[in-house]
Image 1: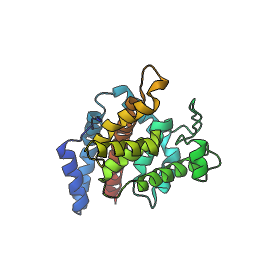
Image 2: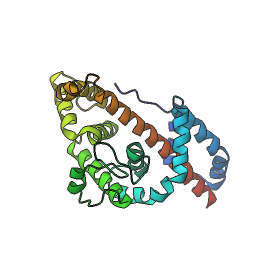
Image 3: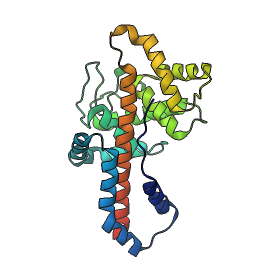
Image 4: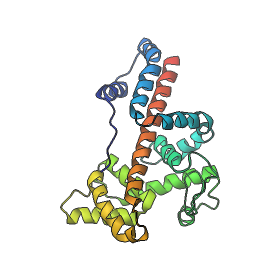
Length: 244
């Protein structure tokens, strides 16, 4: 079962305050004097089990993300997700390397298969803008295939799993959850059933079956990148507000 990394209550309370009240300039100025250390502590807490990974992530944010950030923002326009989630998927897939290629043939910033690229009208998977927009639209298309009554976060995690190993496997896992009288709208319960589906369909291909472990790690890592990028984005937004 996926073990979610949770933010501390104080962090959510603080962001909730920012969302529902209009802050005056002196308050924002005070905020900017504390925010850098505050957000640093929160990010360190999220990455407490992977310090080297955080060092590399920050390096990639400084060196690679600026080249593609506006395209990530553009790709999220009109979608149900924030640009930071699309950027997080891309980091997991390629570390924001437009020339990335796997041994299975997927390529580009969003590591699209040839089939998916054709489906999304993409002719060159290594073109950064095409890859990002194609990947974002494919994510939204998969997201829209799931029932509307699934809680949004659970729906996001399910869509990520489908992005990684195909919608058919996810749908089979949801069906199995229903057969076992589990909640097919809750990612953690679907994830348990997903292991059985993957073993039945692909387990014979390897003596050491790892597909379920890999998709759990895939979703968990994107969750980590997404939360980190979202905090950094909010930190930057509040800094800019304080300068006005």
